[in-house]
Length: 485
Image (cartoon, rainbow, N blue to C red):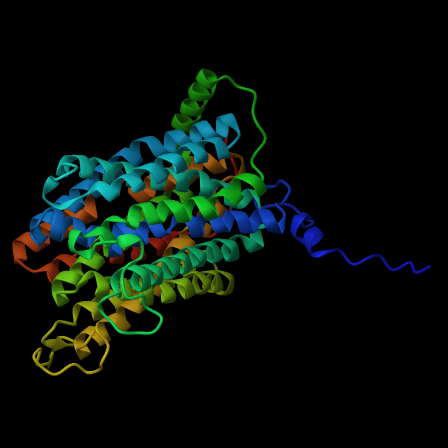
């Protein structure tokens, strides 16, 4: 009889937790639990791609509002309002989660709200035939707030499921899955809803699926329900396979009081966490700049090059593909150079990409090279038919890679420097630092656009925030803070 132990089955490997402790000091999750956590990010992030950046945002201010300038201003105001709500409530939720122990119940509540508000965007019909512009705006604020509240509890779970050395890789992998999900959904929309009747390609059906009517903007309106279905399919495994923190036996009222008391104490004690406080402040600045690039990027491209929904979907596919590599790239530079230097590299790359993107106009390449916008198409495809458009898309892929790396490395940095005993609470502050000045970048972009009558100068104003945040990060160290009672 052989003494060689039996090789574990595939099921055993996926359901057996690795040896060692997690970044927060507890037991690690099984590989299945870790993948389920990452899949939730893959299910959640298409909300940003479909609604906030590429499809619904340009539809909102170019069609629902009907005036690109007024619509862009209103879009910024709605994001500012959502940011204010998040800034006030997110830290409180994080503190309550720490006091109550478990994250999943909160994550479940806000996930349901996120899916519900996204589905309701189907009724965002032009000319206020179904919902008023006020009602649509309210839904948008609610869905943006819900998205960020799910991030508070999802992010707080990260250091509890993997060892410290793997935090960056899992964070980057999760963001990569989010962009990959976006690619799949963009291609699905192009093939099944946008290209039918427009191109004669063998893999494209003759008519749109489900009787979708492009004349009534149904492809643009369906991005909310489409996201909700995807979110349900790939978000559920987290609730079954990713372990939660143990329940703390407190009544709801006591958990609220204890959580709020702990939050106030944590905010006051930030003077004892100088490195964390410095990081949160400068992360707030550069993160606001990155968010503004995303919030206004799709609309800027649509207005500058007069792009249609087809162009924006293809644009989204290309950028999401490269952003998928951005998540992996972010994990690599974090592992190779450390969290602080990784952020410096990613924010610096974003600034370079933004400057280069602004150098492209329909009649100009790289600021100074003239181009005849009436030139014949450079290829036979029904999108990006001029050299300025093609080069612009190539340049913006740089931004997609680096911004994704910024987000991945920023979350990793927080997981590595926050005190382990107050992880969810500090991730509440992390959410605050990401949204406390969310009103600032949209306001700055809108004002610069008004003052200069130029969407390009409005976008260029984002460089102020990115440069300030990059400079501030020079003074942050990658070192774990010790909890102070």
